[in-house]
Image (cartoon, rainbow, N blue to C red; front, side, top):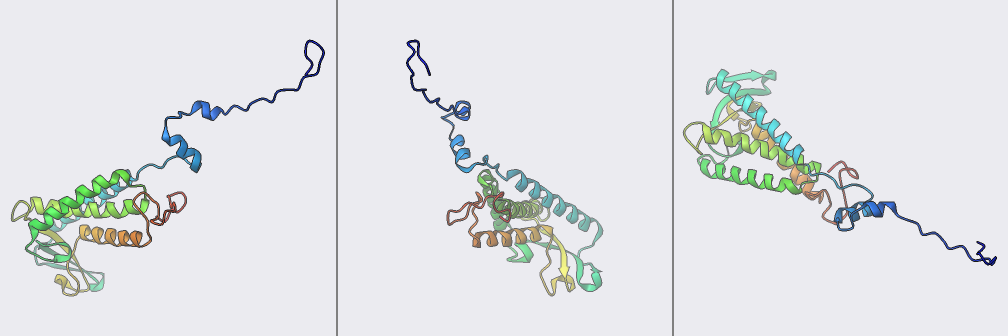
Amino acid sequence: MVGRDGAHRPRRPRQAIDRGALLSDPSDPRDGAVAATGTPGRRPRTRLLLVLALAVLALDLVTKLLVVATIERGADIRLLGGALYLTHTRNTGAAFSFAEGFTVVFTLIAVAVAVVIVRTARRLFSTGWAVALGLVLGGAVGNLVDRVFREPGFLRGGVVDFISVFAPDGEVYPVFNVADSAIVCGGVLGVVLALRGIEFDGTRSSGGDTGDDAAPRD
């Protein structure tokens, strides 16, 4: 560059302007997280959990209403060549007729489980855990409805069970319903996720990220 006096002067280097830095809020901690990971923050899987729980609850209630309206207590309907029977029974215990006579205890446990799952949903980023907890929540609420509204009374109502496999009246395997199946499936999935070290936030217990984008299997 030539000055007014004709002397050559060195050109000053231009400073690069980071437009992203100007647009971002330095006080927002999320900007640092996005810059470090290169991906925007994930949303909690609360909606998936609630939708799945409502679907399980609706299916459980509809099937129980149909059984109560169409099958007499003690009657057996043989299906699939005897591999499946529809048997209308009432259960005052836990899933699969376990520990009958403790209806109030299991009712309070179901309420506690539902409250814990709903509170956990706020920090739930793992798709796998959302499915597992959604199944457990829907099943727990489904059986809870029976315990609250069915005979013999409030919190002591008998749960409608109607699925018997390989033999009628639960001779081979205890009679169960849709809610029981959902609770067991959700529990098994939860055990698998725990053994794999997958946390509710989608990361592994060893510290490595296993987000839904990086590892959809969670």
